[in-house]
Image 1 (tube, each protein chain N blue to C red):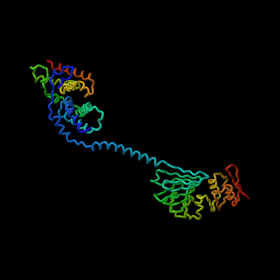
Image 2: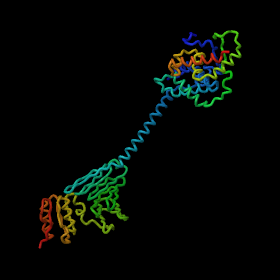
Image 3: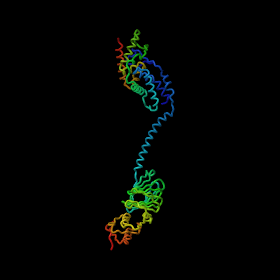
Image 4: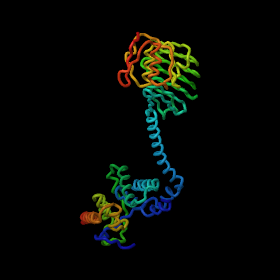
Length: 279
Length: 161
């Protein structure tokens, strides 16, 4: 034993000793010798921490994505004097008439197929899970079908072209089969058969057909298709039967309409017209 | 850390740690328990010590473990015969009454400020240099010297007749 480098002379005091029951080596053999040294243990500890973090992270991501997917909405707007076709994530398509829009959640589509709409749209729905269209006045439920929905202001009309469709409105519900249509009359759903398919869905091909429709209604459609304003549409309670193609020039269409209705449609400013009774 | 590396640390410091707790408690069972627990903890966390000063960590852990176990030490049992003595290297005179000296010595050690007695015992029992004590207890060398000085002065006072 080397002499320690000490400043003070401690050796004037006797050296204390401690007598232990077990020596260091005995303690080792009893407690530590048998400890397993496995790479596995080492890895397990490391993995646990990693997996814990990974799990928490992926749960957080999952929750975050779910929130996002359920909130992120796509809106497709078809302006006045326009027509468009929208694609839905599963391949279903929606034709939009002028002044209409649809809203849906693209990332939530495979959980729920739900579309909000206003205006007029023709739906071609791919077979699959429940497909729902929501409008202010009612909802339409589908299973692999094509149907036309009219939801403007307080009006709500559904025409079923193929497949089957369930229509709900004001606590009423009914199922439409092909060639059937339903509309709201004083808040009641009234079913009838489609007499003229072109009247319901001709707009997709730019064909507008009317059978005994109030002139106001016809003029409103012209307004939408051509982006013009026609004033005092309510002149007279005229009913119009006829058709026109929106590919025609506005003047031609106005002439077509006004002749049988005995009115004159006069231009006041650019894109603004008013009606004058003939006679 | 491999088991081999762990054994090296065990062989090097187990006795010191066990002694250290004994200096503080004069309780052999407690000292053994604490020492074993401290080394077991080191083993369990063996993969987390990369740049650690294991030596001073051992002392720190032993101190904390001791404190948590032994809030109040019963004074009576404590300082009775806690040390045997080896007189072969001491420079005291041969014709001393050993029994009486022992009693005075034990008493003096028990009455001494624990900070000072700790340093004194580490030096006297384990023959550690001041620099080494400083490293283990994470003190400055000057602090160690001061405590040693105080310890010796205290002993001299207590043991003079």
